[in-house]
Length: 258
Image 1 (spheres, rainbow, N blue to C red):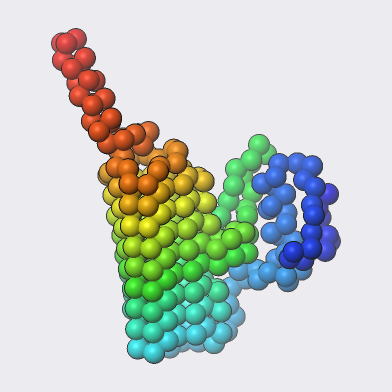
Image 2: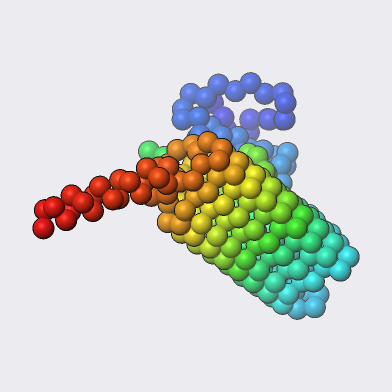
């Protein structure tokens, strides 16, 4: 039975969960944060210094030729590469890593801490004890939200483009050169293979695995894994050809009943 006084360390624990395994993970994360084994990212930086209209922690590292917009806040432990552009009113959470030549648009929130899970007894906050890692040559649009990892890092790989108003959940891994168009919602623990395109207003369910070179048409809901090279659409993430055929049959039936 886990309590806040239970000593834990990485690589040396065998734990028996007598309740919901997800609840046990919440307890483990809280213990690791409380005892200082992992950083408590909910504790805001108290070493912020005004610099050019932005608030930057003295514990952050900013590369050469990187520009930081007004009213942006960068917390302790963040590492931002060279020749990046961070827009106005951006928040970059503690221990975030951002590669070279990356752009983050106005109003975006990187490494947000608002992670929660729903269980039988209600909502439980899951403290993120991992990081957000954003690769090089990445473009993130305005007002995007990327949650930090809970028990593993959230990763946006090199060359990805993330549109405006996209929400990427905790512990996701987006592989190289993916395109995620505006207003998409990606739940936690999703994996997306390289060179895939997710068009606007699409949603992806928790723990889904999407292969490489996949095309997700606009306003598609993905409740299941998608293999490499498929083009999918519709409310159930069907093959686009199958979905178009189904819609055609539905229209025929509708017209026949007029």
